Length: 210
Length: 210
Ligand code: NI
Image 1 (cartoon, rainbow over the protein chains, first blue to last red):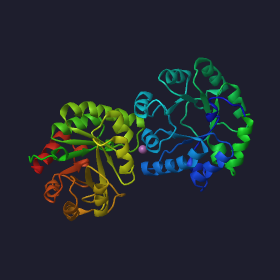
Image 2 (image 1 turned 135 degrees about the vertical axis):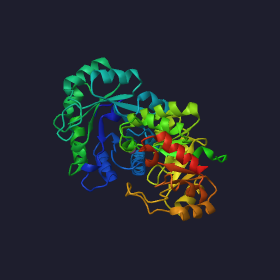
Image 3 (image 1 turned 180 degrees about the vertical axis):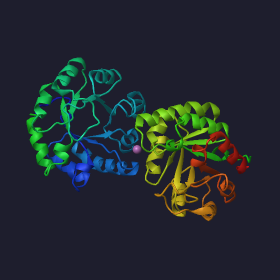
Image 4 (image 1 turned 90 degrees about the horizontal axis):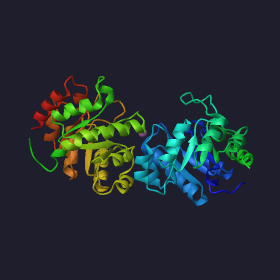
């Protein structure tokens, strides 16, 4: 494993309860972390605030003793309530300026960038890292921007200094290329969430990342 | 009009964009406030965080100079970002304890109570006011608890000291009874939001409240 200041985001798991096949989210995440996931982004799109908060509290209790980062998708209030390590904000979430004002300087803010322009703006506005999305097109997501590809990562890598995480269609077969193109980490959804053994799935991807 | 410390919540408008018939939310709210609405609760259930924030900022700009209170439904982060006067939390939103910790002592926290027990718990946990919901059954909402009725208001009024606002099925014909039963105010959705003239609708209800 390479050691760098950014190794905490080497292998991100982005949650999607619809893929967990009846297993609890905490159960899947615990397995994935045992397999080498270095950062967990809790993403909930349909549940109530109370349920989202309860999931976040459960993941916080699991991850904090293991020194694995917990990032909350979209919801600044949930992140603050549980003392998460950061938030991940898409282009239709709260703008960085408002989020930073609420969260303070120490909370990590990751921004989804769907273009070189998005990435430059995010860095300029004080993002701590950028999620390049999507790297590859994914059959399950139809509402996303065109895939940026490995070339998109190379382009953004030349222009911004903050850490980059690739997301979208990343799995065992292409994870290494994403890092080789200049990303500091990869974010994985279905390749781990939907795996029969999330632990094993995480292990093999982590091994690929070197 | 009776004057009391709680007159700010005499006539609440709870927003519902699906009822605004193509008019912008700000337009309907401006009319309603001109007609006598004393407090606006922004409720959004389906839009993105960015859209919710933009609506909240627009309402804040409208309402602050008029000294009309702005309450944000559910989203503590939106309330903090725009400097709203308060939040309104349902039983599946963030628990008061977490919300108070984030919002501080000066931000109003209203809690929806669907029973006497809910109301007692809300007061005990430090709520600033209680929304008694639903007072009357509403044909458009099928996911609500059984109607508490005017008797429910009387019961809760005897047991709790903080201000009470009735919500659910309240209109011109029954608003006065809700106040007579012990509520400090009424919250209205469709009777104003869906009215051809929100201003006139607010005026007649406000006049009923005396
Ligand atoms: Ni929501």
